[in-house]
Image (cartoon, rainbow, N blue to C red; front, side):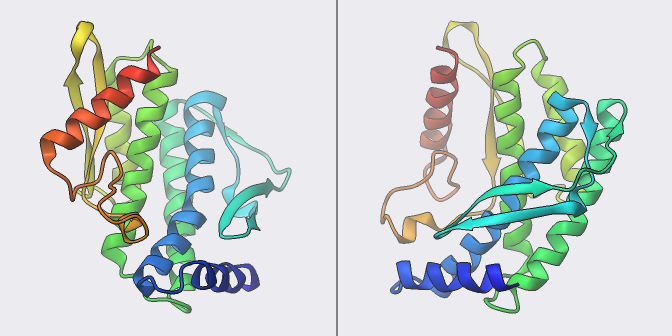
Length: 213
């Protein structure tokens, strides 16, 4: 909690004229990104799930960057079982972290869920770029399983795209907004739902093709 108080204070000092909602969202996205990455890497690349309850995170200024895991036993198994394990752990962690954030700044459950869904979907796109041997249908099925275990079904989805050169890509169709446009007016993330849908698809497709180079 001391780290979270310090992060909140740093965010308010760095962005004093920005809505408190932005500070709350930044607290949330900072806290969830490393556990989400670890769970996806563990399930899909490492092949065993650690005990994420032993995770501690480090603050660097206005960012959370750096973590430690206690040297506990890891659970091996098929991918679907690891998703179930990692997703269950993440769901418990996310509920605890959201409660702690709301002691400092108000963040409603729905936008929090949508931002977590966006993180998981973006990670599955990331996985598709690193495991090009996997059919996109497999990635999409795993994505739906992650969202289901986390209680995030319907809060976003992966969108298949047939791009130039016969490339079959996945992009994110998200429902949540990270509010970054509040510090960079009229500049939206590539997947931001606030922009024109055709532009969203074009920007993400261009990014996906660039990853193939």
